[in-house]
Length: 258
Image (cartoon, rainbow, N blue to C red; front, side, top):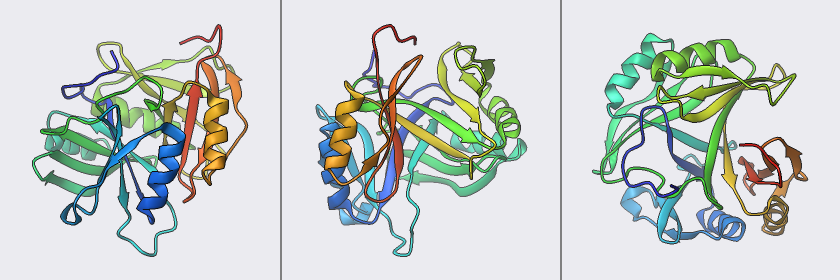
């Protein structure tokens, strides 16, 4: 099922948002690429804007309050039933708290963490807002993977904090990739070890019907994109929006696995 109506299990990517300097331009770009509609929040919420697909929340955009900011990225929030407890477990495992646990206007409770490899992620304890209401279908979140030059500490950390099991991937020979799985066996993402990566970053992959068409739409809307390439799981391409925030689009190809 792609519809989500309740809080996700511990460690599952449950929400994504992006802070950018120009909300109108961002809405134009992501509307053209994904067909999203937008519900702009009030000034008192910082104009935090819900991205909607068929009326369901799939992501959010917000004006970045730092006028001097030059780097922008999609934030991923991992689900928890108790933010404070997960923050404590993260500290014990070597993580750093960037934003202490805080309540968000009756919508939920959140914190922002940095893992020992340097990767940043959020925690979300849903209340009125459970997170993405549609996933795993075209123009919604499909998966998140951490790319890091220090995969060892990252794998130890996420296994300790979220009780993930770590499984290798024989489909990608020569790559240092590990699946992250919840105790129930569900795959929530993975960790890619890349010695050449300049930093540890959680990436966001959106599913699309046609990666070629999504790339063309992104370029026409003012972004840039690599040409799509095929891999065992489908056809993917990295896209950069007009502000420099990167994400990946992926579509299935005949005979693709997974």
